[in-house]
Image 1 (cartoon, rainbow, N blue to C red):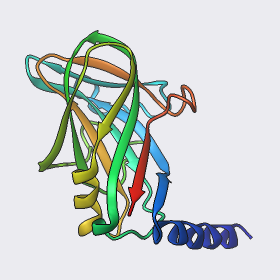
Image 2 (image 1 turned 30 degrees about the vertical axis):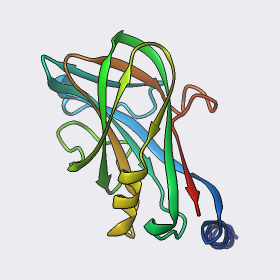
Image 3 (image 1 turned 90 degrees about the horizontal axis):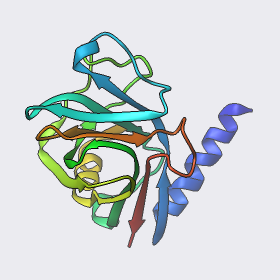
Image 4 (image 1 turned 90 degrees about the vertical axis):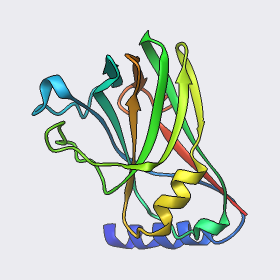
Length: 182
């Protein structure tokens, strides 16, 4: 019976994705990794930390999205990542990158994901609150060559230290990705 619901969900997502409209992409795993605790997993924490020390990444956020739809990149008019900055120890610049594959709940710094540095989206976090990031180019790139799940990795620069709300903290403040199609 469970498989039937998965099939129905895939068909429904395909139908929505093939016509103009919006699609809320399913967040599968959200976690962060920490260079000072290279073998520790932080999945399940209520905060997702992105920080750097003297310009070197120290903590990175991994947002794993399921590709449970069929959309041609040419049919995407926009893709928006919504985050909620819950704690800002040092405001500054965060860069979003795309990575093929999914983080696991056991992902650590030592066995983390690699990201494509040729496609990135920088944004600034100056204080607590909602952050809306246009990730259209990244998502088009992720969908162009990959029939697999993908992740967005948030990397802090210039001694920035920000904690974003995770899906464990609150459904309203959890990271989300919305794709609009033409």
